[in-house]
Image 1 (cartoon, rainbow, N blue to C red):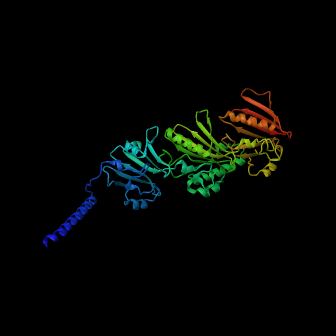
Image 2: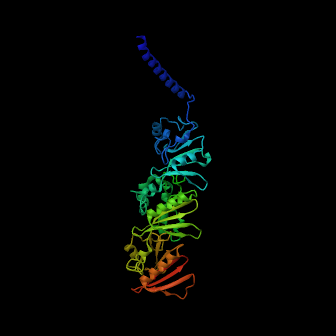
Image 3: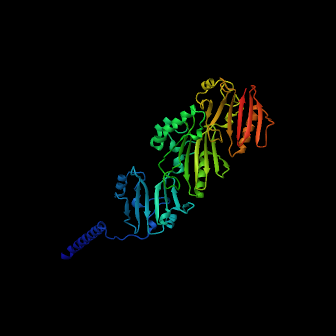
Length: 464
């Protein structure tokens, strides 16, 4: 009988010993005693693309600090790994909102070979800083230069897919909100704090718009007419949020253009990916090179009268999306008038009559009346149709427009072809030179048209 009872007794002793061992191990951890950890960090990172280590994987970028603390089981911003020797985690929160912005993983080992094996080859900046991107989750990782390869930082970023959206000229970040063509009040009501200079500069822009209409002596490009747009997330290799995003207002008090900035760190792979994406989104590009060597890629949607331009430098590129007025529509052969925007009182009508016929575009510059439209195809500023009159005369005698074709002489040739198609063969004026060409036309209704091509622009004047 004694032997039969011995087995349960031995099992009970072993169980109690095991429990005691686990309790002692837990007590050692609580007291900060050393616990055996792995020195092999090959399993610290998982997944085939950018993935946070398991110990902090439940921390959600953009979440408030209390929610992050609850998710990972600690409210500290620094914690040591419980599984890997020499590994620690730093959590960075935004200054005001206290939302998680970045997680940095520190190690005693060189991390680039480990991450390359796990996620594939990185994209490297000109300075050699490696980056890995996951556009599906909007998460990126990089090895900060100061850490010599032994720290990897994680953060959210705005991929081109999330920022700009699929094919077409609609911009994903502005979905459901007014932007191009919006007034100051419409923009302010919809975007709020994302107009980061509005409280300081909104009133100044409104004042500039009003002053331009009353002061003939001022130039629009000298006046305050832009606001910074503050979007929340960095892009590509930017470690901070972008600074160069800008909204531009036109003389009619509406948004004409929005410009987004992208830092690429001199990485040709990033530029190639961006160019491929924009070509797929906007369609076929016209590529130009400016006199200072800057490369430009233009995209057009004539039906929507929207234009996109990519300007490329060694370290960055910008993307502008703007309204525009197609020259092909302005000089269309099947439209009445020399310019399709001319009202029935042009040329020769009184400014008041022309204003009544087109109040949407009538915009006097002090005592100088004009119609103002979005920029032409290659123009950077709005297209102005000046209403010419003699001093103190009650009526106009002509109207005049300048069409720019900067860095694109082929576009200048197209303007000439459109003029001849609409008005018939041109008569070259005797005052023409090799670099300053003058032509005369006569419209079917008897109006006279003079056209001058000089310095990457056409100057067209229509008179009785």
